Length: 138
Length: 138
DNA sequence: CTAATTCCTTTCATTCATAAAGTCAAAATA
DNA sequence: TATTTTGACTTTATGAATGAAAGGAATTAG
Image (cartoon, rainbow over all chains, first blue to last red; front, side, top):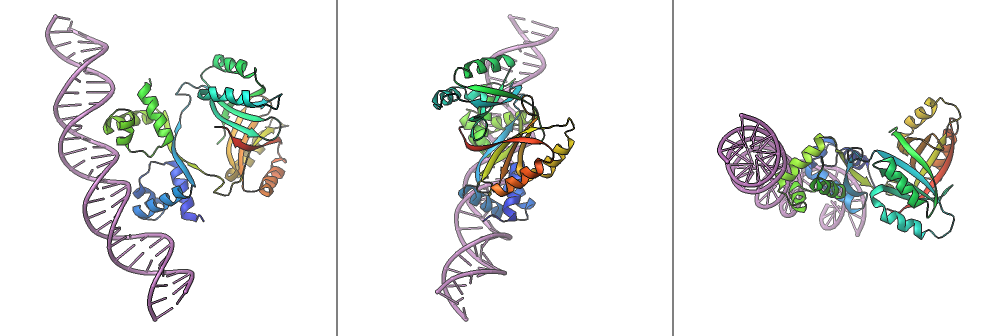
């Protein structure tokens, strides 16, 4: 389904998705139109879901990056899910998981104070264990 | 530092970073060159770190998405960090965290078998708790 | 052996990006 | 108050990229 050229294209676009098709072609030994056709096919079959940017969250004022293991006492998750819907500004990902907890919530906050406010509200619906990200080894 | 137009630009580029500067300008009520100048400034001051793509991991054969809470017995983390260096294919993020464990490892695997192999090797260096991602509510 | 398919290249018209010059308003300075 | 400076924008024009169309080589199917 995907050959090595396709993988190279995905690799290049992961590094810089605003590269021109001509340049992309040069990197994978194709002409511009050939690279463009490959990319179009990768879009059509859904391998490429979209084009995005990486933003420096700290420069946006989000100095705190945290994970919250969520533990629901009741089996009724809706209050928690409604809460996270309302707090999208602070929520990066909200994974439903197997294992210890029910959810793993990835969040960002400008300050400890806003984190605290968030936790107070969160605790009305569920219990949690907090892990603050110190750095990402990747 | 960043005004509402800049935030709108970041929002649009997050949704589609391959949009033309002309189109981007139209969305935020600017001309092409003006939008382009804004974006260049956002790049220069490091707010925009880069341009990337979203890839459907399942279509690449990675059917399993998991988080591993890592617990190191010894204070000497290097064996673990060397191990993760060698396993980059399976590792999405490797966060050093405060809280219960020492690290939170985000991984992907094609099969349970390869996950099992990974865990066997991982367990030579550290203990872990495994959480499998069922879905992402976001 | 011929026809169809796939993947590519080349060509060309259209569109985009980018640099340069000019406009305007707000802020700073004398 | 008058003048200058600054910053952000628009307009214009040119060089470059995109995308559609046509054509060619290699592979597969009938």
